[in-house]
Amino acid sequence: MSDDLLATARSIIERARPREEVEAFLLHQREFSVKTFAGEIDSLSSAEPRGAGVRVITEGRVGFAYSTQLGDADLDALVELARANASSATADEAVALPTEGGGSEQLDELIDPAQEQVTPDDKATFALKLERLTREADPRVRNVEEAVYSDSDSTIAIASSNGIEGSYRRTDAWCYSIAIATEGDDTEVGFEFDLARGMAGLSAPDVARKGAERACRVLGASKIASARMPIVFDPYTAAQFLGVLGHALTGESVQKGRSLFAGKLDGSVAAAGLSLVDDGRARGAPGASPWDAEGVATRRTQVISDGVLTSLLYDTISARRDGRQSTGSATRAGFKSAPGPAPSNLAFEPTGRSRDEVIAQAGRALLVQDFHGVHSGANPVSGDFSVGVTGTLIEDGTAGAPVKEVTIALPMLEILGNIEAVADDRRWLPFGGSFGGATTLVSEMTVGGA
Image (cartoon, rainbow, N blue to C red; front, top):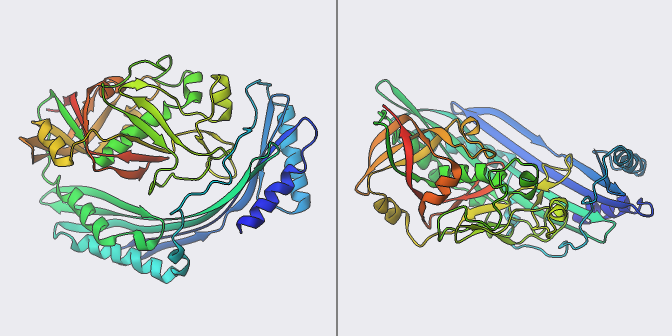
């Protein structure tokens, strides 16, 4: 399949005219998903999207078009449509395709060979087992909102008239369960998930147990008094925080004035000793790939080093606007979209403490396990951060009373400046990208409660 897609990509760029740059991005994907409810299959779906996205650049004008039809006549029409779209675009001297790629570089561990042998019945059985184990994990779990298993097998190919070409394949599998726990008049929800290259790498017992624990841990929760106090993000909420931050860390966002980091490159933006890295080749991370959505080799980019913003994340066009090199950070939603810069696998570097040590260091603090309203309360442009949370109170290093219906607030740059410790319990979470969350101690935030 890889060879077929690459051959099609090559045939597309052969249609380039003189003084014209052409890029072809092709994707062939097999997707499967099954959801259960009340011990039965609630829904099952499979799909096989396949298509090509083409960019044509002429005199600084870029046009994009895509098609699911890949016959010769269809490809002729596709390139002509992209060419027509370019003719009506505004010229920009920064617009160009990359000239140095990484298409020949490959990554290990992007494929689980055993996944090809997993049948739809196996997948349905896994989802039913996940639901059953979640319900059985604790007697207080009265229901399971849903249990889901999904996977995909993707082949990606790219070629450009600048000499970049390559293809690779990846398999991905993930599952999640939503436990509903009840005690007295109180009902709480616990979400947990797992991801791997194939079903064999997923653990239904762990997901079931942890989902039930997250729901039961906050049963009987109540407000606490408003205060300024330390906050501890667990890996799940730490990754969500990074998900908000990541939108502000691209060169394009800064250039358009849509980032709290505008004008802060090479300046101090976080606590001394804190480092933030985006690694497109991180082992075991869901966003790992040998090259980005433009064919540029992925790499490790030190975004924040010892509290200083040392780099933004660039695709080719945003990098040219700043007189820099692409960081291999171009991404696409699929063949139907043109590329743009975004994090690949973004995470804080550990500061040398375990989770238990970070919690002990916190003293009396609020351990946050869930955000509520993060999309409306966190603004990557202004830096405002005020969200509802659920969690537990920490007293002398020990988890205590469950807490809910409180808000935590502090500008994001101040949060970065107040981060005292990042534990070594990183896990990767997909929040519109891949973000490595770890238990993270923020020395002080405002808690709005009773």
